[in-house]
Length: 340
Image (cartoon, rainbow, N blue to C red; front, side, top):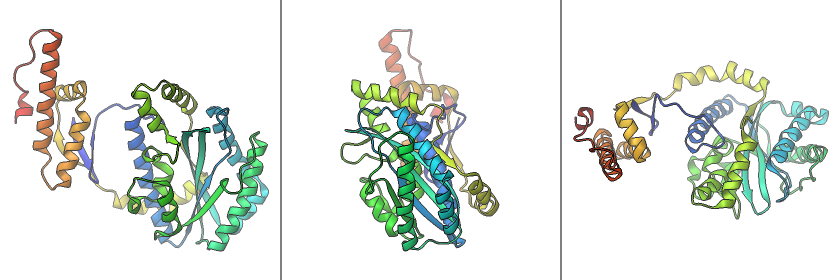
């Protein structure tokens, strides 16, 4: 089994995964990072071609009495109503909106579940700050009406809609991220990361991301365990990211062909046998091996010796566990591929 590295990130190959972008900490990180990188590359190319981008956050009022499936239904239904409204279509046409990329994020806090949407609007030409401000006002009216039409309370003018221009520099987006992404390297955070890497976020105040709730559940918090069950049922089969057809077609025609030429290659840095992989899994050291590979590369060292030490440690644990259970003699010696 090859261990490969791409852009400094190590991963196992030939491994069957659940592919859950919502609930699995491993698959979610991989899939979200891949989508964030793709979206970021597309956004950079779009801006370089003289087009514009607007980053919009849509929120709804919620209480502890609101259940997550209903809130998610309102979130999707309200956005669909906004897009179908003739007034919004006229505004979008005036701004030159080509299409939208919408991502759903879910947190939990003292007011219960808090699903909200991040929408990236792709425009034919750059949008001025005045146009952005007018869009915020107009979009709030459409959004508030749509949320009410879906049976929920009207969003507040302060928090219902936030719109920011995305530029090649830091600008307003960086200021927004500085407020919301405590604990992360803001210089490396982009609009794409804000939209698609919800697994990395730490909730503000008393709000928690799903993976923070899951961490509490693993520690034995019964309330968190119940929240995890609710979350998994509500998100099963639901799309985390949606792109309008017009935008997908436009990006394929104008952007994607140029991006394929700049794909970072993946390099194989270590080989594992099936037996070694099974021992790593059974002893809980598979992640430690990946961390060792990444750390060695960061230090400019070859990753082989460090990875081999982790494999040796895994076999030591394996022998000790077998001996403790008393199920026959523990394996003697290391496999030849590991000793080499």
